[in-house]
Image (cartoon, rainbow, N blue to C red; front, side, top):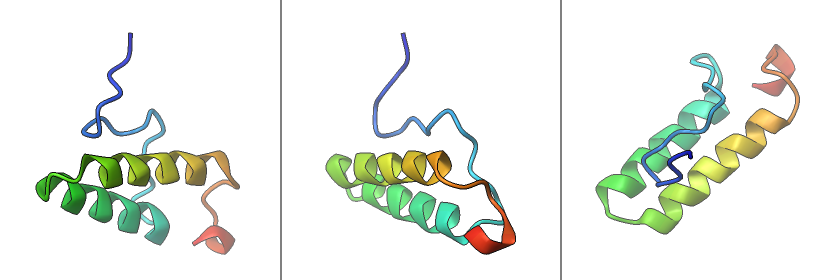
Length: 61
């Protein structure tokens, strides 16, 4: 059984060179610090959707 709490990142590892991944992870971390679990979860969902899109390429950055 997988942990689906806002603190658990998605199964796909964010790309360190991707601006979108970085922004979503920063927003998620800030939301967690502020106790905003709804926004933290939303950020993780958006990160997963981003990973479900085109692969990380120059055009996707």
